[in-house]
Length: 300
Image (cartoon, rainbow, N blue to C red; front, top):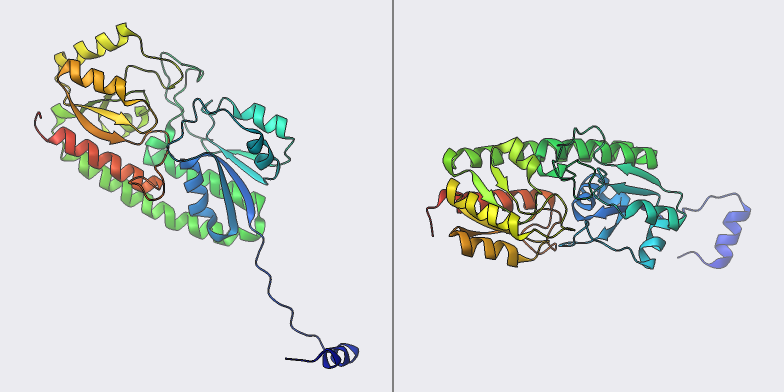
């Protein structure tokens, strides 16, 4: 190790000493909920520090921001949101925080499904990530937002996005192959709220739900009775629980209709990292596995 006298002598002689390498400061990114956070982590890699507003198993429909959230948003350089009125509370939070961050909408360019009953979402279904084809559009939007916020990371972000898109291609093929193994007359299921419209359109499984696209409104007794009649008339094989909804409604429908409980699906949020749906890809694989297991098997 150089002595202090040696260092001073070298500096006086104009010798440049190597400086210690400093860790790159990570780009602070806020994602509104866990599925978006996973996309940002996959594409951002070690260049980003991601903070979630609504964490694993959380319901973004009914979330109430905290003062800590306002502080987090204020310190962000980029905020990634779903859009399609999924996070109705977010505009107020961003405004009240005074943040200078760019807000990127991950669903930009996606054609939303229209809903007969909007339940607070303006007649559009916000759950676009339930189609892998749409998830690829999310990835492109997140990549572009990261590049705009951190141009020095352009090569890394584009490489990460390309690698992740290849994984999504493989996921899409796996889901379609699994659905093909389910008899056509059994591709029907009940869920608590209407979160699987894009999945249904993309993969040909009919989902029936007593609640609309939001969990903010309760299903009426009339809606539940109608669903039970429909299950019996169409011989719907299974009722699925959801990670963000109270299981009692699904359990009641199963009990009164004779359909079996087909397991738990992850609709609007990932599980904890250690759970069965800790990433978007793990979530989609878990869901299609649960669907196949329940719909291919005969009545319980």
